[in-house]
Image (cartoon, rainbow, N blue to C red):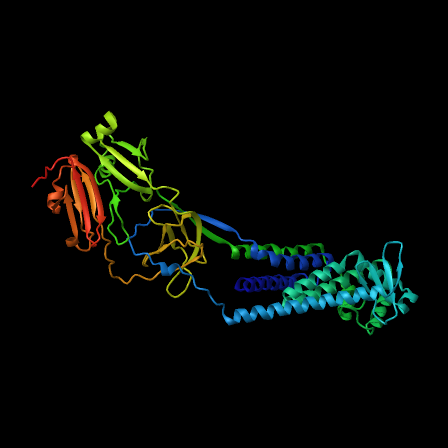
Length: 546
């Protein structure tokens, strides 16, 4: 409803602007046909301009925002039905009632004219025009290709009257009258459209009067006829009546000197007005290109949502460091879902179900000479068990309910993201329904929401940062640099609830960091039933440096 009212109001404003320039520049000119075209064209154009939106695309390159792990707030994704303000509902009802009333009046007038013609005595003329003679005392009028005359006027057959009505038919004034009546119904609240309607009717009479005088009919006699007919009864609103326009204006226009040819250029006022309208409607869309990032070291995260994850804590980190230092050490053998691949840089971390590391004799025994530099065995998640792809739509809001422009909404752990538009809206396509979205804006806390499974639009509100640091997520990272294994537990909330087991033997961090990487067969991180975080390491020998 709000969108409809905004559109109708915008149309009304452009009609008023165009008509104001017409009144200032063209109304007193004698270019009657040009004036008709300007009035009709600008009225129709006013309905089209709100849809003419020029979009400017602005390319922006940015790194994928790095955010801390935050709990998933499913409550945020539950949309609430917004109630429209009472004045919007009332305005829509009043506007609709006005449109229906105006259209009904026009249809009623058309019906009466058609009924009058159907009950009349009709005489077809050689030029295809029909003269409908009625017994009522009405002013001469025309409807499409029918001239309606009272019996008295038909018997007199005044040449001036016939020339006048035939001019209305030749210029198809009836079609223009119906078009303006329809526009008036849609803009009944706009004073400008009512003035435009009056001026267009006057121009129709000016054109018909000009056609009469061009046939050599005496101007004074014709003006006397107009005065005589001015006291006749009125006709119907949808017809072109002989005495429809103000008599004084018609006589004044007959006596006015023809406008000079240069005055026709005044009609060019339409061009700058249209240019301003397009400039007002222009929008800038920001297209974000996320810069590629280097493959991150896979590190197990011990959060409440975590389950058992088998991870490679050494080889991938070693490879990342080696790439940066341009080390030419032999690469291990990569096996992905039972197939040998050249590298694993293009594998998204969230698509990995498990990762195992084989070294030394175990690697050679399984894969022969190909495994002499170590083997990384990766099992990817079954695509059939993954969520279905869907399009996610929604809005970002500030705390005060204002739509948030320029906020970032991205799929967690991917480069896939969009920026909200001028209405705070966003659309993400091909999103896994098991994915998590992150809403990000500078100076505000990041909100993470689950993708709704029923396709319901999201309404996400971002709160301002309070200045207090958020607690770090519970993270234990294991990396290998220069053939040394390091375990970082600084991200854990409570180190006391973490136990490290090496071949079923409990060790501390110091002992763990002294383990030779070449002796590690596999490493696993999990949370047991008591809520303790456990790190299990299997090595080929029990040689632990003290």
